[in-house]
Image (tube, rainbow, N blue to C red):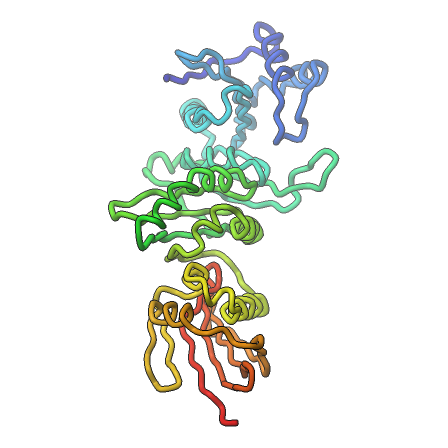
Length: 388
């Protein structure tokens, strides 16, 4: 595949072709999603598809033919603007990144005064955002309610740009960190049965996640170690990340892989103290549920890999010891009752819970440390029986 750009003469030779292309395709993430012939003709007559400040190009491919249009505006300004419009049939085929590179190269080569080329897209146009990033463009702005939506609430405008000196220096100039949330780490299976469950549901899980409006990138790749996958996730903000977590918790993937160990690190998420404590209490209550205590997969999902418990006798219990012991214990006649609750964060993602637990006629003082990264998993527990 070889892409090329050919100059558009919208005022004369290519007028009918531009009108036919722009009216024959829908552009769902633009303010005007469907253009009429009268609207396109008016834009052409106003110079929006070619004048002293604007250049437009057909996007051609030596095998697939004509793929779309790209426009460079404000070429008499240090910052030129780009507008990419691919035909519907060629979207999602990996064309956009190559077009952005060709258009930026043309702007810098033929217009000495242009020092940067900037492009805007709507916050939920994840495909275009990926295209900008794949091309090495840097996200520079997030303008809340900056994109009008016909018949709906405005959305954020996301701005990307490439600098003339980025190409010369070989690497993009960095900008301060934005509001994205990232997750990275490993998914680790303990046996072939777990690994088979991961393989059976992974393709659907990846497909559904990448289709979420807030997902920027989502990759789960096998490593050289059997039963271990490397995970990398990027979401546009904390709300999108949390929505993903809620969906996954009730999905087939979530149910099938509940007991599989996750070693993840989350960055960019601001968790307030009240929510951290509430999430930890909900997990603590699940850990006291007799049905959960009898299920090895449920327990594995709640206990961190480095979990430790100090028992009443002073014995140190490992994660495996506790899972075996809980499965073997005899259920109590009455439900556990939590009293004198106290919870406080120990760090950005860690919570200490202390409480008095009543089970039948027995009382004990309990303390638990929960790591919420991203979901709560207990890393330490201790219990002391109170005298009658």
